[in-house]
Image (tube, rainbow, N blue to C red; front, top):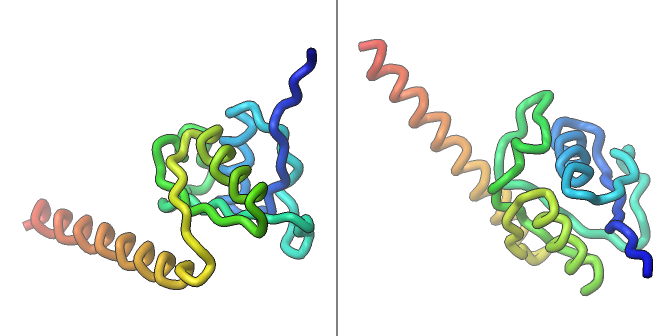
Length: 126
C-alpha cells in the first residue's frame, strides 16, 4: 500500500511565500511554487502566519506561530489546517468577513511590539 505525501501550491514569491514553501517542504509536503500572483488554482485556501517573516528565514522561523486559515471549500479549509500543522504552526480559522479585522488587529499588534521595543531601547540609552 503506497501513501502519497500531501501536496499544494503556494502563491506569492515574496518573503512569506518563500518561507512558507520551505517550511511546508520541511514538513514533508510536496509544494509547487512559489507561484506568481494570478496563478491561482480553482480550489483555494489562505494560510497566513501571524508574524513578520524576515528575509532569508528558514523553515524553523514559522514553528509555533499562529496562522490564520480559510478555504473556498470544506476540503480546502481542511487542507489549510493540515498544512499549517505540517509547517509547525497553530491554525486559527478566520472567516472571509473577519479578514479585514484580523489584518487590522495584526497590524496594531505588530506596531505595539515595535513601540515597546523602541521604548525599551530609549530606556536602555537613558
